[in-house]
Image 1 (cartoon, one colour):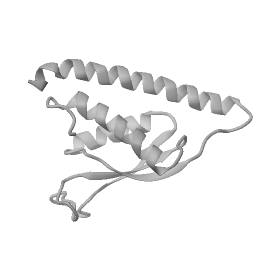
Image 2 (cartoon, rainbow, N blue to C red; image 1 turned 90 degrees about the vertical axis):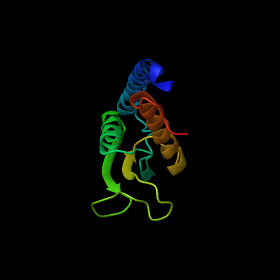
Image 3 (tube, helix red, strand yellow; image 1 turned 180 degrees about the vertical axis):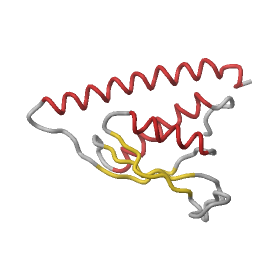
Image 4 (cartoon, one colour; image 1 turned 135 degrees about the vertical axis):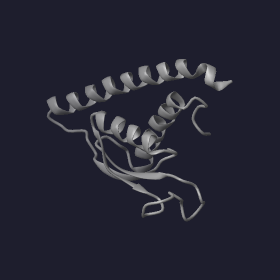
Length: 131
């Protein structure tokens, strides 16, 4: 039944992302034009819940389009080609290395990335985001 709400969830995601894009542009612009810089750059490794290369690439692009963040690298959890399987828990997936300009630490950066990923997956998957 969740697939019936898919178009609305996709629209909701697009509106949420547009809002985040505007807010991050304001933060970067404010930081550029003030004497004191408020940035606290950090690089984090983020374990995604993306199941396909499409989802991973889309998340990477959305991160890089948002001012103040940049996807530096994408790696499979298994390491080399073939099936992407995590050695610890057997789940498929990808990890992203992300540079964030405005963060209160690694947990804050990962929480922001998880929020973006959840909104994205909820919008693009007909069945919704995983819990």
